Amino acid sequence: MSRPAVEVADILYAQGHTFLEQHPWLSVQQRSVLRAITRCRTAALGGHLDRCDACGHQAISYNSCRNRHCPKCQAQARERWLHARERDLLDVPYVHVVFTLPHALLPLAYRNSARLYTWLFQASATTLREVAADPRHLGAEVGVLSILHTWGQTLVRHPHVHCVVPAGGLSPDHQRWIHPKYAGFFLPVKVLSRVFRGKFVEALRRAYDRNELDLAGATEPLRDPVQWHAFVDALFESDWVVYAKPAFGGASAVLRYLGRYTHRVAISNHRLLTFDGDRVSFQWKDYARANRSSTMTLSAMEFLRRFVQHILPRGFVRIRQSGFLANTCRTARVALARTLLGAARTTVATASMTTEAPTVDTWACPRCGAAMILGPILSALQLTTIALGFDTS
Image 1: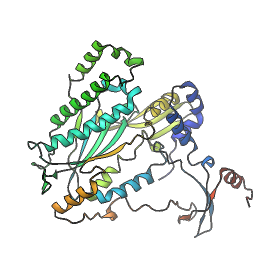
Image 2: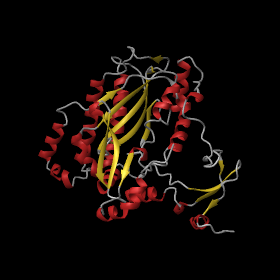
Image 3: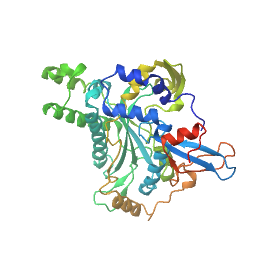
Image 4: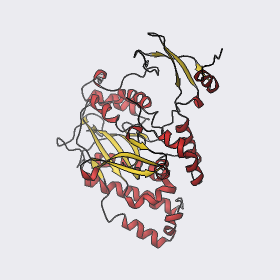
């Protein structure tokens, strides 16, 4: 893939210092991420002097920052993660369900993001498990893989979680695999929506009663119990958005599907179109108009402000598994499910997928196209000296 015309790092090079000066409220984590993106694949992080065995060409390859928010560092991390997930796949259709927080909750997310995102994970996964366990719907124990996204196409805050679920589950006595009752239908969306809303609001109320919410700025009026109860009551005036996509293929298809969502960042470099030093233009899909492609232009300050609000707290896990896919029981439960489905082992046709076993990082020779052989690790000073054409021996 060719290098994008503009990268987030280019905007940080030009306006990052000014942005940091104008936004002293940025957290240590946000500042750390911006610094990592700026230094990614530059001499500041060191690198290698690589050589092509085919034609002898030598070139410098700089180290990546490997930060999970960096647009340039996600491809190999995604491949490694997907390869590790192959052992958990079942040869059944999978369902994709999306749970979205309502717009009214967004002001709370500015100072309580970790709490709200944790409740989003917990409420959505628990909703799926409880509704699926009800004999009126499925009557089975399901497994859930959840992926948090906090952004919309225009980089505004839009917290939602993508849940990928095998279509079916283990019977309560673990003696058989229960398939959905109707083809093309998994669980009722309206029921999921209302149960999800109830569970999330319950967590919200509990935190308020324990004085665990940071209510300041635009949310400070909610300190008043009267306004708080009015705010909570308004959350029940409309159904929360839960969207279930049609079931898609089995084991070989699910990895390709997951690859679209797992290691995404708020915006990829390939969506950036132009940057004149002050204003940034990027491409976005207008979902309200049949996914029509549109262009948005923002000042560099506004673009970076929107970008940093999607930097997660340090250590916050954005991909989680629950139900029979939970870490504490996944190996045994998946093996049991395969046995009940009549297959001792699910065979994944890796040739038809984009994921293969992770290999040593390498790149193609710019002269002949052969694989470059990674050279010894060099310091930033050594790399700079080589780039200037001096001998480092």
